Image (cartoon, rainbow, N blue to C red):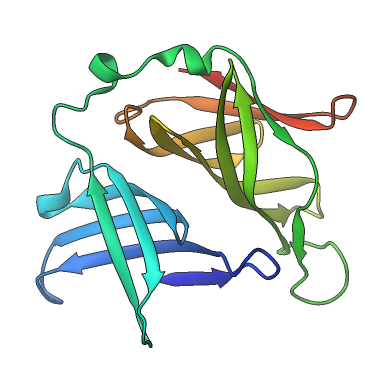
Length: 199
């Protein structure tokens, strides 16, 4: 399990996590990524092969330790039957601002540093959701590599990659089985980030 503390973001933590059921020799493995209290299942092996859904982590009270609540999509929760794909027809808009720079070496923005954000409102086609994610500086700050979670009432999508080709690597709810890419852009006039989808 990898936990990265996102300072100044309401104690939120970005996670890339794997669970193994049945002991160390078991081949039943489930992986998830995202903000600790809203992770998306990204893959499975063994009895978890093909699983999709979400995972919510919370601290045990009293601690120490954590508990995880799984929400698996039903087998009949297919993309074609339950999801209106028109949400992907127009660009998704996310306000610019309030990002936090994780400056690992204390030298300002440099390769390996990370920009993080949480609970940003996402607007599209009259619908609203929230976005959270992280991007790493690469190649002398010329590019970023990102992990971003978008959550809407009908489902959640996790994308990963460079801004010019973000690939959906996990989805839940009515977006289960989604095969899509997004291109991230910046509209400085409207002060928003844009995400344009190909499904």
